Length: 317
Image (cartoon, rainbow, N blue to C red; front, side):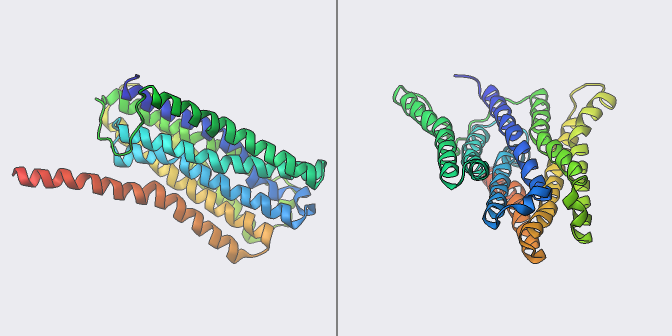
């Protein structure tokens, strides 16, 4: 069985793979309503694309939860609990992603094959995705357990010896986990400005789109800053100062990226439904989801975990 430190590194690397796959689709779904052909689609297909965007936002929220847990709850240490959270987050994230693929294949099939072919394509894509990601995996996991395999526990208190170099390596990995989402979104959002539909948006929507671009670009700058700082300020040396700065930058970038996603959601929902208030409500729900999981739950978990240590220290005194 691999060391816990190696397991945590592999879990974060695998989360990064899933983020790369998700970010491209997320950028496309934000861009789609700004394409000229979108307005010619039936209302039901437009609403389905909006639903797929919501599912991708849930996927993104789940996949970016481990970096927040690692830095806020665990303080950068390698723990069995973090490994369990990352495993659970990745497993849960694959479900809304599979549903998004099914919606997208229905969308494509409807335009090419008609309703019957669209349903077949959607069910086929959903079945293959769920079978590959859950069916085979759960079957293999059950066999492993029968042979004495050890399941990861979210309640485990196992903590690996985590050196400063390990913590810095992990925070840089976590920056790479978040960065693909910002990069893909920024590219799609810049391209959206060149579309014919963008010129017909209300002035307020165009300003919101520009604001979203600013937030996403700022998040990307924050995520790239640790690399520049490490080279130019620390000369590549591993220091506590660098780990602290890199951790703050990664968490700040996540908060800023969430703002960019929420602001652009106002534009997309308003474009599809014609209702600005509905767009604002959707953005607020998305912000509550992102901030509540990434910062609210993690802060609560950190306070809850530190309470027993504080009580023990008081009794010892």
